Amino acid sequence: MKIKILIGLLTFSNLVIGQIDANIYGGFSANYLQFPLFQKFVESYNQEQALYDGLSQDLEFNQIGYGGEFGIQGSVSNFVFGFGGSQTKTMASKATFKIGDTRGFQFKSYTFDMIVGFRIGEDKFQLIPYLDFGTQALQIHSWLEYDGVKSYGSEGRYNGVWTSWRLMGAGGLKFQYNFSDFVGMYADFNFPINLKTGAKGSTFTHSDNTTSGEYFFPLVAGPGVYETDLALPQNYRNMRFSIGLIFQLNAF
Image 1: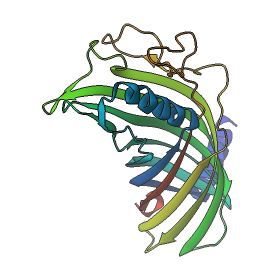
Image 2: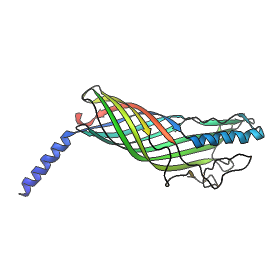
Image 3: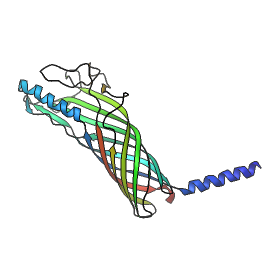
Image 4: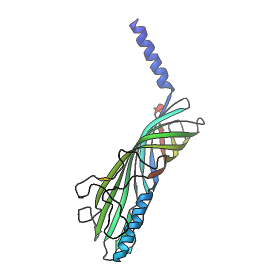
């Protein structure tokens, strides 16, 4: 009897596994960081520096970035599920002082994705609308640059690495084209739903020992006046477009 039950379970497992189309994917990502309150920080930073006539080039918020992603995806009939991770960084946002020094900011994002969706189409071409649930960490890397050497040390008010994290929800649309039973390509657009954050992970705190302040705080109107009791909220949206290759595991 036990042998019959074991045979039945193995048969059922083989049938289920045989119905799963599994693949691994990876590729290049481009991202656009929408962060309204950091833009306000940039404007107030330039206003403060203008009082001292210290800048030869104002600070500009560079919202464009790039990176990569990797994951595994499976489907049963038309139901699609998967797990993956991505890492992106923006181009540096810089201000240049008249003495030749440079103030720089750069955002780095680390995301873990868990997707569920459904596919439309068969064989060669597939369209996959999906929902994405996961976590996202965002870092602000801030430095002063002297003669080509970057310093994250405490001599700069904003120097250091500042980190926040949050739970994330997103919607997405993936286009997939299979060249053969083994390899294909995809294009994926991922659009976060939540612009604002919840209570947890809602502030940027320094993640190293180079800074004396606990929070990255925004400037307010007036020279030398800061919101030291209010950290920069992470009300951002990091939109991502990816393109890459898919390798079918069932082909092995």
